Length: 295
Image (tube, rainbow, N blue to C red; front, side):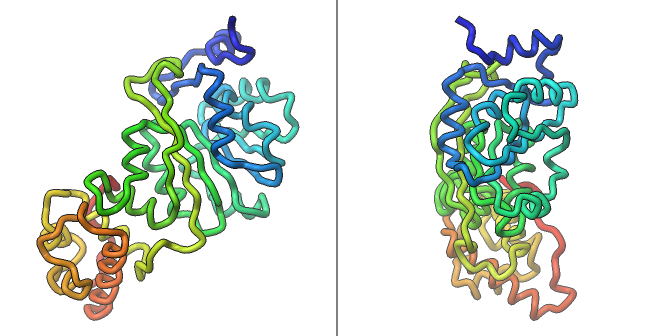
């Protein structure tokens, strides 16, 4: 028996198909959207912002859970489809747009409260989306619930000081409490991806988990340490500091340690030491960038 809302039938009815270049994989298992909606923790007083409305599969599960649901869709052909599929819900607003251009602070200000964010995220944009949210000012969102590639979700939730940790997980740990909620098999999607998926829940901290001195310095430190993760710290930090030995000594961290061995507290101490070292160097000690990459 075909479910009342089967994305395959919805696409067929509108003469549409999945677009591989958009990274579209539609949920077809009817049991998954309600589970995602529930684990995300949105309540009747919340404003939900959904990333990627698609044909409104998750949007329909979110409708009725909050006082307002804003669902953003990049594919302009799907925007009218999502509006038809959510016509029953007055609290749902379907927008066309690119999530990479969303001003999260402005959205929270318009809502008058921190947002609760959901999304079945395209795998090729997961890092950009997550980094954009982590960079958003405090008070813009309180909780996020994302369906992601399992490997990415596990990496994001990995604790600093473990072999699985990365620049991404260090930044996630600094700003949020991260939980892997449940797995979703590839058979739950159309078309079926080549990888398994998992639901990641992020609860925004009121304050960073540790004092890092300057968030930009922390980003530089973790990027450098994990860009070439087999390098010892004294070599890995050279792109962001001309005197890594001095910075490591100030943070009381051995020069031979690797990034994956450092706790969040140690990463924070290293960031503070970098800030202090740069202050002693003046303008010549400032570094605008750092090693590329977040993972």
